Length: 535
Image 1 (cartoon, rainbow, N blue to C red):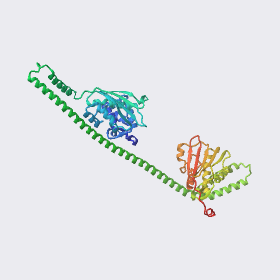
Image 2: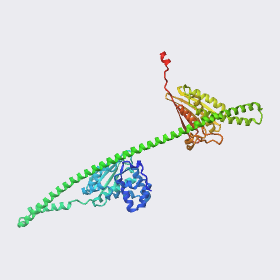
Image 3: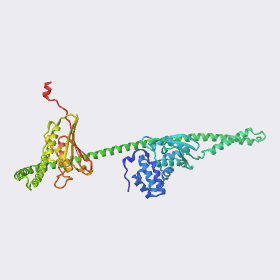
Image 4: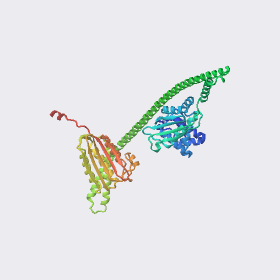
């Protein structure tokens, strides 16, 4: 199964050329099955990493190294993967330039100068060098931290460089290490470098010395004309050879430097195009995500409005059809209550019937309030509405439910439908009382500010689970026992508040009670024409 590439894994931080050694090692030593398992655990596609023009995030690269160690059980595998850079398919351009420079030290110097083309999370610097020795420093940018597997992989890269030119691998040791508390990583690199052109140079110098000796030897040894001619010719040939060799080396070096600069410029252009493409992909992904979120929000809003419209039609019809029978039932119960003696055994049944009728009456009131359009009244005193609601609730609720009311701030002007807001508050208080099974406390707190008024209705009941919180405003969803709830109270409450320009927030957790917050924006005070005329 091919792993799906995540956008955050393609950040321009580590060139896939650095990670390609993992593929080479796994293919050569473990086979395709282990290769597939490693990349599956790292949640990375092999084809993407195998393309040297791609980039990986530092996190994805470390995830790949960790998966390789976990699957193979070889803690040296990150180092071994680093040594695979000797393969031409990994750091191809750099390898070509290194081979043509014919200097191991030149390759290390070039790596320090042009590391930005392959890694973006740190800076490389060549601190010092001598024949067969170099010291390289790696400083990580803010937000990035060296890891053990990445450190081993770097050591593998550095060790393999002499093999590009046919020499033995270099010996790598730490001068300082971030893993041991240092601020930077400094690597000491030592290798055995075979001299280039040394045989020719030594031969030329030998010819020069031979010629000089021909001038200083005794006259008796150079009396023969052929010996003098031979020595002179040898001296001339040696000098000409040295001059030609120097000229050739200068020409080749200049040519290679030009080629190296051209390759680096081409690499820079590819990198710029890749970064631009990556940026466009991220922008398109972000835009698509936002569009999908907006579409989901629009769909949810459309579904909610459709449900509310259906409830409105249902509410209007049910309310009118149920109102007349309920009035008749209430009148009959009142008449029976007046006729029956106080100690009649039928009184408990009558009381139960009256409570049931009261519940039906509240349902009808909810439906009627929901079905009609709000009749907004300017300068509504929300505190007064709440106190009327408290009085009504006290008359109908259990005496074991205690209520408190607190007002914070100065009075604010609101434009509301008093009846609908009173019905919404009463529904929330009734819902809290039912959740507490008629025993507990309800705290009301009115916070008034210049721009917003917030009413908090909190109870110390059992609270709600996340599943219930997500569905509590769905029509006909209820957690109450059969016959004790219709699942319309909270949806109707939210709709009433929304129609009046408010918002309902819910905060609840199991064992911690429930808090509803009704938020209303305060309308700025508009000076009346009468007041303006008086001035």
